[in-house]
Amino acid sequence: MLQFSPLPGWEVGSGGRGAGGEGPPATKHAAWWRHPGLRLAAAALFGLSVGWAAGFAGRVWTARPGPTINVQIAELAPAEGGGVRSAPVPVELEEGSEELLLVLGVGGPGEDRRFTGYEADVIDAAGRRIWSRQGLRPTDLGTFQLAFHRGALAPGTYRIHLFGHGAGGRVPAGSYSLRLLAGTPPP
Image (tube, rainbow, N blue to C red; front, side, top):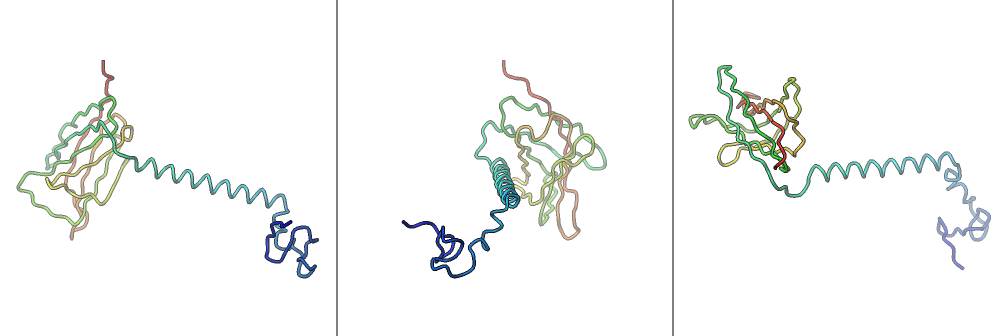
């Protein structure tokens, strides 16, 4: 009857030596495994690795879901220059919408600023930056689109700052105000 052997030429039950009784004892290679504390540590390390991998995979899966339906779209115009602040645009989060798409308009047709890259920051009412992303690209219409899953932005007031990157570094390209209102369930 053949038995599994951890090393070629070694048989289980041969007193810790090879088939002919030659060679070092087999316990030399597996002595760490016979120590209960080391087995427990190896099992814990394996469990942590599996848990970390499952958590990482879960975050990747939830960060990249499939297509969404019932997308709510809100178009925002930039605040006027010269320090004049416009009132935040009220947007009621519709019940059942899965995503909020913010379309950021840019200045008038006379503005022809070209930047090598763009980024945006979302600032809450307390002045904390709660979201920031680089790598934005304008659409063919010259607008920028920011999509948020429902619940990513709680009802409240927000400022969105758009920046362009060029030879002069980071340059303000637009500022927007938004007030999210909790939606009411349909009748």
